[in-house]
Length: 135
Image 1 (cartoon, rainbow, N blue to C red):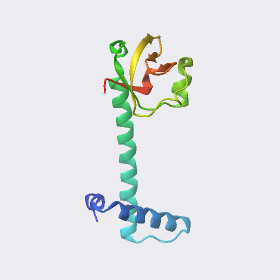
Image 2 (cartoon, rainbow, N blue to C red; image 1 turned 120 degrees about the vertical axis):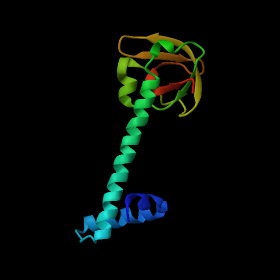
Image 3 (cartoon, rainbow, N blue to C red; image 1 turned 90 degrees about the horizontal axis):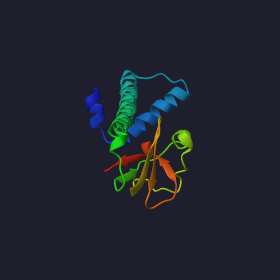
Image 4 (tube, rainbow, N blue to C red; image 1 turned 45 degrees about the vertical axis):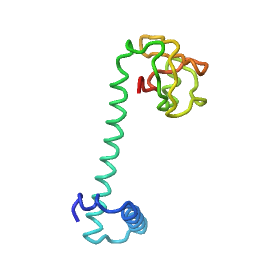
C-alpha cells in the first residue's frame, strides 16, 4: 500500500493501525513488511500535520503582522492565547474570552515589542497576537 492509498482509507483504519503499531512497539513484537510500511505512513502523516499546524500559525502571524492597520471599530476574532503570550508585556488574562467569538476593538496601544488591544465587550488589555483581525 502506498501513501496515497493509506490516506484514502477510513479514519477507523488509521486508528486501528496506530493501536496495532503501539502494541507491537510496547511488547517489542516483530513487524511484518506491510506493518513497517504503514508505520512509515503514520509517521509521515504526523509530520505533515505538524507542518500544516506550523504553516497555519505562521499565516496567522503574518496576516496580523501589520499592527498599524488595527484600529478602533475593527472586528477581532479570539483565536486563543498561550500563557507566554498573556505574560508578554503584562497583558491581561484571556480566560474569560470565548474562543472563535468576534469582538470589537475599542483601543489599540502599539508598544515597541507588542500591541495591546482593548475590546468594547470585555475589560482588559489583551495581546493582539491572540486575535485574528477583520475575519
